[in-house]
Image 1 (cartoon, rainbow, N blue to C red):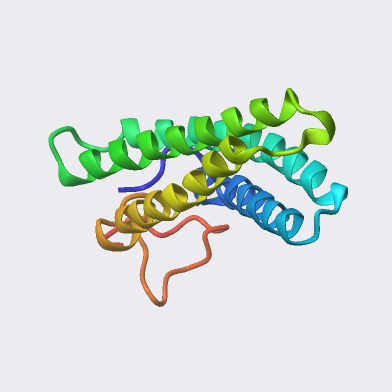
Image 2: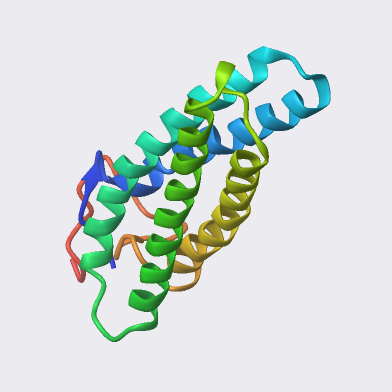
Length: 163
């Protein structure tokens, strides 16, 4: 089943998810560095990367929802896609709440609650990433009907089947 939302022959959702995932993971790294070094720049950097990651996650979700809606009802793929999307929504909420907690503190300093929310969010994102991989790698969701090891470039129109 091919993706509905494409750019230059490729699904948009998988192109976009690398940004929020990378930003949110980086924010956790900044939090850990802050805990180790107590340097103010790390907590501020974590707050900004969380904000960008949450925004990016919401944008990626729009394209993921468009693809999910095209999956046939009553299938394993539809159920896994629902778990993937719901889980990622929870990830975004966890990080957004972590950001709001930091917003209320001086210099964006994370308290224990903000850190727990971010760490829980990054752990859950690993689970939801696996679910996304299951959709593509195992169930072929968002994979071109003309895919194969010798398929033509996605920038060129593939010949009609049987031609």
